[in-house]
Image (tube, rainbow, N blue to C red):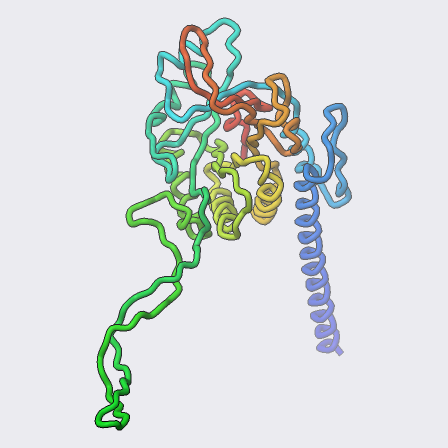
Length: 355
């Protein structure tokens, strides 16, 4: 009787354990699904600064409540002008623009030096100089681009090989067959490759390269002295169509930066590609148990003015809007070629969440 009782007790305990495990898995699944819904809110609703975005999944716990609060915070209103320019203008120029009475610009784009598709190193070592002047910063990593090509494009080539072939001739009115060696053309299919020694090429775009470039971005940001939590914006130039290889590239880049934990991934994208890229990386954030809003810097000249907010670009997930390209402006007697941006915060790379 005692043995039977103990046996029943063990069975009951196993059942209870299994039930708790199933409930735990179910709760985790619900949390993950809810987090994805929360991150996708900006794709489905219009943001109104006068009201708080409702939390549609409040019933599943404090974690989702916290995520919603963070998203609302990230979408706060703000108009902070900044500019970016390819090469570092020089200390004197940056000081002059910063010290001008009523200077309109609060922050500047900071190109990580010697990135794959931005070979210049003029910004190297200028982080402390710029922050001491009072500049906010938006850190940019120019990774692989599609440009006008197609990643892993099929190429048909022809090579000449020596083969044994049968040759038929007539000798004294009779057909005579013999084997001879001769050069013959052979066609084969291959894939376009990046030129030897090149670190920037359409044909380098892939998931494997995304992982490699993420490690490179982390190393370069660290060498420049950027603190933990700094947002590093991956530069993804405009594409008429986003190839699968490019989606693999930026998703792998995102996953690696998140798993490393030193920096926070952000994205410079064109309005034409913004929704797709946002949707892709939001899923990577959720899979990494990161429920904050991915920072997006969106380029579009349509309807831009300096008194508008980033979300006026037409995407509620925008934290920076680049609206004017390749203009020359003069401040405090110094003329510079710049692109004009408006951000929701005075230093776009410094508003990362604290651990």
